[in-house]
Image (cartoon, rainbow, N blue to C red; front, top):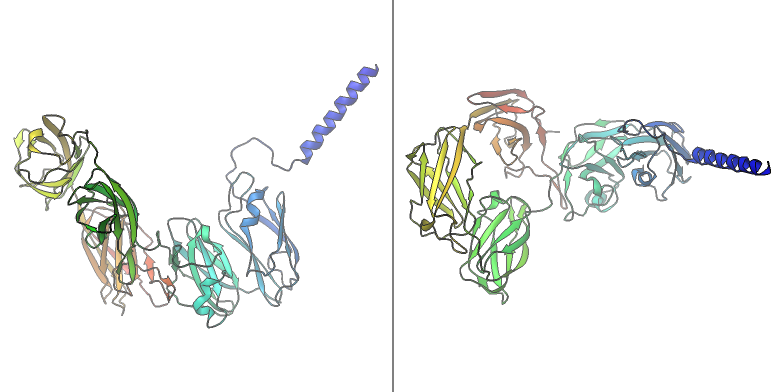
Length: 556
C-alpha cells in the first residue's frame, strides 16, 4: 500500500511539473496553416498622439508574439535622443523607457521599421510611426513620395540647423529615418516647421552619415524642402542608382601566352569605343595589344598581345569622365601569361541547332558566327557553304574580331525558315589548339518571323523648358532604350520601335548628357526632375500609339 501511495505521489508531482512548464512557455499553439500575416500594432499606452508627454515608459502591444532578436534593431526614436532609451520585450509587448530630459514643445516619434518580425519570422509589411509631444500639440508636417530602386530602400531626413549644416548635413546622423514600403512608397509624418534635406539609400545603410564615395544614394530634385506649419509636401520622388561610381574591372584571365579576357562589373557596350586600357610588363614597359569585345557577353573584353609573353602583366584602366559623371573607374589587375598546350578542338559556339536569328523585313540582319578560340584572319572569303532547301545561298562575310564574324546573305533572309551551314576543316585555321574535329562541320539554324515595328507619339502640355527627355525602356530586355527630346510644343515621336512592352520615363536633362542624373551630395547638386508614366506602353506592329495630355511640370 505504501509503495502504491509513493507511486501515486510521484505521478502527481510529474503531472504538476508538466502543467507548470506548459503554462510558463510563452508561445502560440502549434499546428494549423503557415502564418504569413505580418504583426500589427494594436495599442499604445499612453495613446498615440499624447501631448504634454513627460517621458517614462511607453508600452506597445502587437497582434502576435514577436521575434526578440528583431526588436532592438527595428525601433528608433526620432529625432535621435542623446541618451538612448531602454527597450525591453515580453511576448506581444514592447516597453520603451524614455529619459525625463526631453526638449520642450518637441514631437517625438517612435519609428518601427520593417525589420520587426513575429515568432514565425514574418516581417512588417511597412513601417509604423507613433507620436508623442512634450508640448500642447503634435506637429503635423509631412513629406512623402516614392523611391525607385531595385532593392529595399530607406529614407534619411535632416532638419537643417544653420548655414553650415545646409552644406555638411550629410556628415551627421540623420534626424529622421524610415523605410520605404516594398512598392517604394514612404511618408515622414509629425514633422515641425523648418527646412529639410532628404536622401534615399540602400536599407542596409539607413540611419548613418553618408560617405559620398562609399555607397550609392539618390537625392531629390528639390534643393531644400521647406515645411510650413502642418504643411504636407507630396511627390518628393527619388531614384537610387544601382551602382556607385563608374564601371570597374573586376577580374582577368589568360588563355595562352598572348591572349586573355577582362571582366567588368557591368555592360561596357555604351563605352566600348571610349574605354582606355593599357598593358605593362613587370618592368613597367608598355605592351602593345589589341582589344575586342566578347560577342557573347557585353561585360567582357578580350585582349591579344602583339608578342607572346611568359610572365606577369598589369592591365590598367583609366578613369573615364563625361558630363560630370564617372563612366569608368580607374583600376589595375595583374595576370600571369604562360604557354599551355591546347588540345581542345576548335568549335563553333554560335549558331547551334537551337539558335533562332531574329530578322527584319527592310534590313538584312547579319548572322553572328562565334568560334571557341582565336582563328587566323587571312582566310578566304568563302569559308562556308550556306543552303536553304538544298539551294546554295550567296553571302558576304565581315570579320568582327579574331573570334567572330558576321555573315549576311546578298538577298534578305526568308522568315520562319531553316538554313544549313557547312564548313570544311581545311578552310579555317585556329591560332591555338586543334582544328575542327570533323572534316565537314554542319550546323542548322532557323529564322524568326520578321520583327514588327511601331511608333510612339507623345503629346504633353506645352512647356517652356526645352530639356525634357522621354526615355522608353523595353521591359523584357532592359538594355533596349530609346530616348527623344520633347519639343517646346510638348510633343515627341519615336519611330521604328520594336514590338513589345515598355516603361516610359521623362526627366529634365539639366546637364545635357541625355542620361538621368541622381544628384551629388558633395558638393551638393540636386537630382534631375523625373516622372514615371504609370501605365505600360504597348508597341504594336505598324501601329502609331498616341499618348495624350501628359502633364510634365518640372517646376516645383
